[in-house]
Amino acid sequence: MLIALIARDKPGALQTRKDNRDDHLQYIAETGAVFQAGPLLDHAGEMCGSLVILEVEDMAAAQAWADGDPYAKAGLFESVQLTAWKKVIG
Image (cartoon, rainbow, N blue to C red; front, side):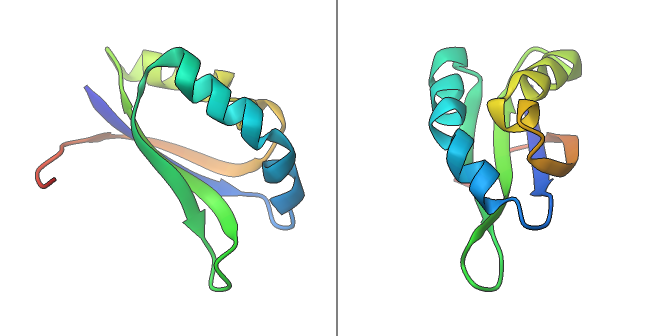
């Protein structure tokens, strides 16, 4: 099942994102659950959130992945939304 994780950073948290980016990318590589991913950008082109498409067994697995993300553990996110997603194009 594909799950879209849409996370918005807390205001002023760009340095927290940068400080934890290597751990976040390592987590992605180690877990093997990420189908596609990339940062959301603000009007100035700075990272301000995340869009991660997870390929997991169920919503519980997606929540467990989200909870284990180093960004989440660092308190980066103001909000996180998990939504079932269907690939149609691409």
